[in-house]
Length: 465
Ligand SMILES: NC(=O)c1ccc[n+]([C@@H]2O[C@H](COP(=O)([O-])OP(=O)(O)OC[C@H]3O[C@@H](n4cnc5c(N)ncnc54)[C@H](O)[C@@H]3O)[C@@H](O)[C@H]2O)c1
Image (cartoon, rainbow, N blue to C red; front, side, top):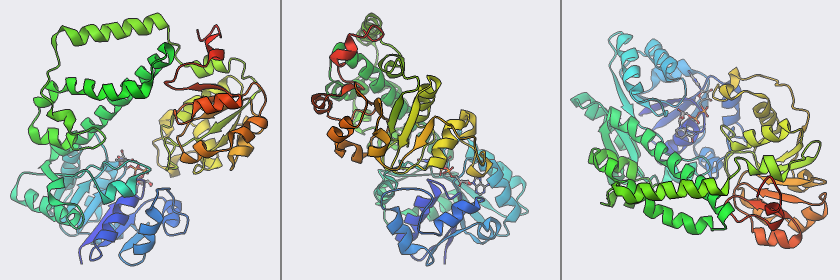
């Protein structure tokens, strides 16, 4: 029986290995982690992460061909294929070298600086004691909140390896694992560096696209344009950026472009970026922005200018819906801003615990990426923050509501009931643009929704106009 071991039972390692175990019943999969609470949770009914569909997959295979364990050395030693899905790839590589007694394929799954695979390779070969390691890069493209769906139907699986006979063989071995459920033409094989760079490039493209839409939405608010209508034209604009991509190797561009979130059409266009029009239009846009004097953080600076000692209900804390993950969530900055202005916060998120919220609000940014066991155990509780398990409770007697995560259930709350129980005037800040703002205004709320024209009430405020 082929044995797989995955180091790191996190958002990537856990779901990915559960799906491999489900789709490949003849492979034994062990997921190992140094965090005892995390492994205990994986072995319990309350999994450590929330992902739609994950519970069912884990229940079907756990104890059969899927195991969660803290016996890191043992499982690494026994494995034929070792996945590395941690943020501390170097120490994981040293550990693999220390404990191995047979040849292994080591698959780097983390998103890491390019050429980390080469660094891992160096660590392993310099400490190999005659054991042969083949290093593969197999970056993960799943998105939290849709991890199981993404793993069942990936746009593509990318496997990079050394272009040697042994390297090709290792790539083929991993390809055969995925081929149990992924069509072969969607499994792209490249060299090591291309695979690593593709993942970083895809993320850079996402970031660019998100920033552009965000900047546009700020302009839409001020000018009265509709961000969703402008958004569809943005797709056309994106095609103008194609020239630099055309200069990349075709395979590499394909690896990036097959991501449905980016759109493969994006790379097919032959329109060139250049000439005077594009630059002129960008300058025009800058001019319009300057004329409209867009304030940086309209919500904190104007809408709740007097938040001191007022109760603000925060709906949503996770960085997006259908996950309990709070790393880099914008909610942290917004809440810290409000706390800095001496507001009292009442927070509700369907999947984030009070402990996590308190930890996030009392921690410095640089501590976020630390593994849980290295984070402060009992952070000082932020006193002006209360966490509630019910949206109606959280919003009771509040002066304003901030919607910071796009959970579907927030769209279906009884806002009339909420309005009746709030202080007046009652504000809603829809930071995710998910609400029917006209309906809210009919109820009586003063609404500020990202990317939508400003409420007449807000327009009259000197700090906003
Ligand atoms: N979260 C995502 O959506 C996503 C998507 C694609 C790629 N990635 C990348 O995948 C990697 C893992 O991300 P994640 O979100 O799963 O991280 P995570 O923090 O959820 O999980 C990492 C786990 O590894 C464990 N760990 C750390 N060092 C270890 C060691 N030496 N031995 C054993 N266990 C160890 C930690 O205890 C933790 O449980 C990162 O490089 C990330 O950038 C993440």
